[in-house]
Length: 191
Image (cartoon, rainbow, N blue to C red; front, side, top):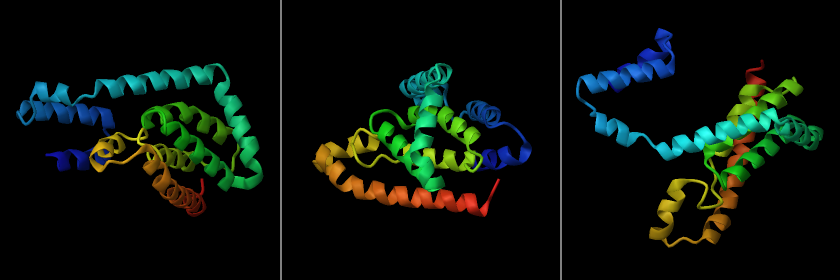
C-alpha cells in the first residue's frame, strides 16, 4: 500500500500533503492504523520546535536581520566565489545545528539563502538549499546535534570530547563532499 501511494503522488499531480492525508485516511479505513497509533506517532515537541523556528525565521526576516546577515556573509565569502559562499553557509548551518534542531536551523537560515540568491545571480537557490539541508542534518561534532548521538552516548560510554575529537574529521570530510557535489551540480545543471 505504501509503495502504491508513494508511486502515485508524483505522477498524479496531487500535492504531497493532500496525498499524505488521503493515504492516512485509507490506512485508517482499512484498519491498518488506529487513531491511537496515528496520534502516538505525532511528535508534538518537534512540531512546536519547527513552528517556533518558522516564526523566528519570519521575525528575523521582517526585522531586517536576515538581510544584514546575508550581506555580511556574502561580503566575507564573495572574494572566494561560489565555493566560499557554500563553505560559509555550511559552517553556519552546522554551527547552529550543534545547539538547535536541524529543522529549526533550516527554517531560520532558509530566508537568508533566498536573500543571498536574489542578491547574486551566480548563486543557484537549489544549490544553496541542498548545501543547507546537508549541513543542517549532519552535526557530527557534538552529542547535542542529533538525538541518536545522545542515544548512543551512555551505552558506548562516549564523552562530549569523543564527539568533538572524532567528529571534526568526519564533519570536514562531509563538508568537502557536500560543497564539491553542490558546486558540481551547479556546473552540470545550470539555471
